[in-house]
Image (cartoon, rainbow, N blue to C red; front, top):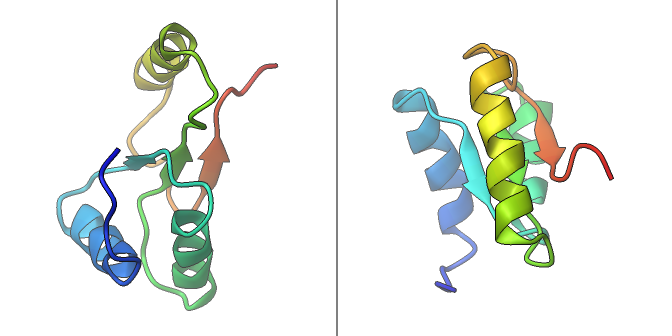
Length: 87
């Protein structure tokens, strides 16, 4: 796992907006906090999907495949979602 300085999180969120990307992260501690702060500040955010490290890779891939197939590009705007959707 790559450790990054926490101050990069807001910059990553901003860059994801400019590239029209939803963020996929395993960081359950700091990244959601920055995402919620951006939403509360009225900033645009394309969405964050948190994949816990405890989730089996196969299950994560299955869930992400469903997201890609069944979602439109704006469905996760200003949202933070946690996998698995169904437990």
